[in-house]
Image 1 (cartoon, rainbow, N blue to C red):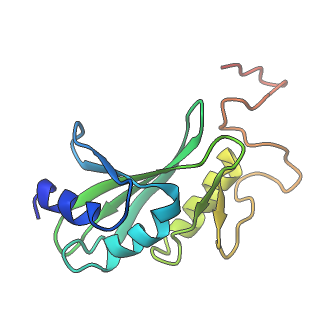
Image 2 (cartoon, rainbow, N blue to C red; image 1 turned 90 degrees about the vertical axis):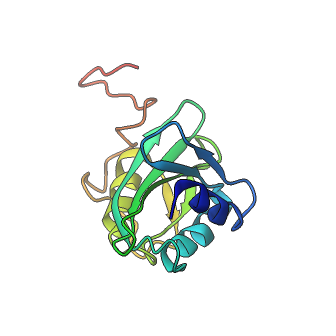
Length: 152
């Protein structure tokens, strides 16, 4: 399926979906309230069949946090980059996708641990790399590190 056909199909699934075509792979920006619904359709729709989440990461922007999902269809060979932003820097919740792609479970735990994105309905959302008593999220640009003196 060509990029234009993918865009047309995905746009029909929810309001507010936007695309960035300036990149090598088609990038879709999904409104946070439609993330789980659109993710489910990306995997289960026969024309897309994005069955492989091969990378999931978090990005710290000045006004919000963002989670980036790299998806591939092993059936069709398509690759797409999906993005969803939190409401702001204080309300950092997004829906989990680990019920859709099980590989997301540990990616989401890492993103939660280091950036503080809370994934609704995650089955085991707890720190992955840092100790339970660690305060804050060290990959956030507003994180204060008095020992290493990292300032942004």
